[in-house]
Image (cartoon, rainbow, N blue to C red; front, side):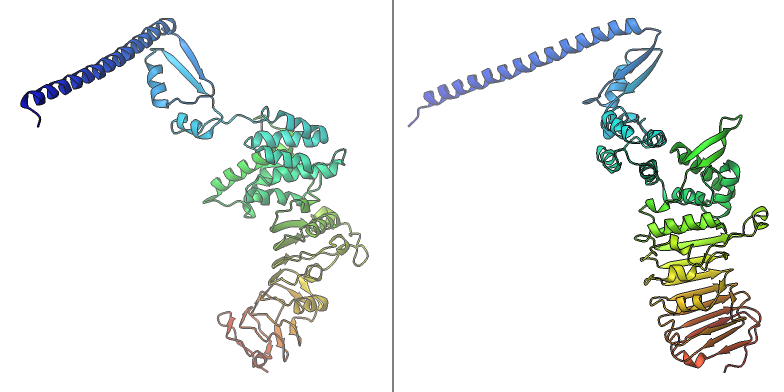
Length: 467
């Protein structure tokens, strides 16, 4: 058994040990506080000396490759210096750090040209002066390019290749950066001849008037079109030729877009051209090059201006124009043709081999026997819209046997078609007929349409007796 004396002695010894341990911890804390005080006094002394030198001065502070800093702490320390005015430049390679320091504003991104100097030199050594200019413009327009992107371009260029080969690859390089709306505006320039002078104001007005750029109202649409124009000029896809007094280019040259097919990502193409042989040939060549990707095609053909229309066109031999479209778009699903050309019918050309074509719209054009046969043979044609179409059969639309096997709706608008005749076995899946003209002469063969559900006519139109 432990005596009371021994118990009191052991408790006294443990109490002394705890006291010694507490004193040691306290001593360490005091030393730590003193160290912090010394450090703070040293900082205050340094700040005081710096403040004396900066008193009443305008100061630029550069924090190069800033890391480990927090903007709040940095700003407080700089305010303590007491400068009358100060600018701070913070450089960093990391976007997240830049956003933290920018305090609600976008950071300034400097060009990566120096960073990619060797790759840039390799590229400029492989191409001619035109391509160098386009590359430099593209790099300044979008400096945030990855090394992989530039290496891919470098590898695609052909050493000592032709100007055309490498030039179109540079155009494609700049083109792929554009928003879809801007791509459409650029492709619109295909209606102009190479090196043709384009009036800036007129072109912007045409972009807006034809619906290539649409905003809430006309002024905002024009403003956006102006921005689009500047972007294309910055990328050297438009080359300034006349500069006005305000410093803006009043006229531009169009970059050659004959080989539009080099823009391999294109899915939807809409163009307006004059009925000129050169423009038609260039367009067909481009469409042929797009045969692996094009899904929607819209072509509007305008008659030549009065000066050119006065000269009879040199009509080539049959098939000479279509020879420029060696490969029809195999994935084409939607086709719209407006207007006529004196050179060759376009409908049979595009219908040939387009097994996926599902919607066809014809406007202000003509239909002959070959056109009707090409339409009837399309296996996946679901919808056919005929607007102000002239027929070779004097206004009578004859839907012949064993054709239009999957057609589901037929829309006829405007004059030109006054009679429709459905023969037995024709259009067996037709469900809807919309016939919007004022003078219907004859509608026959309706009983030969087993799936027909709806017919729509103009109000007040008197329907003829059905045969």
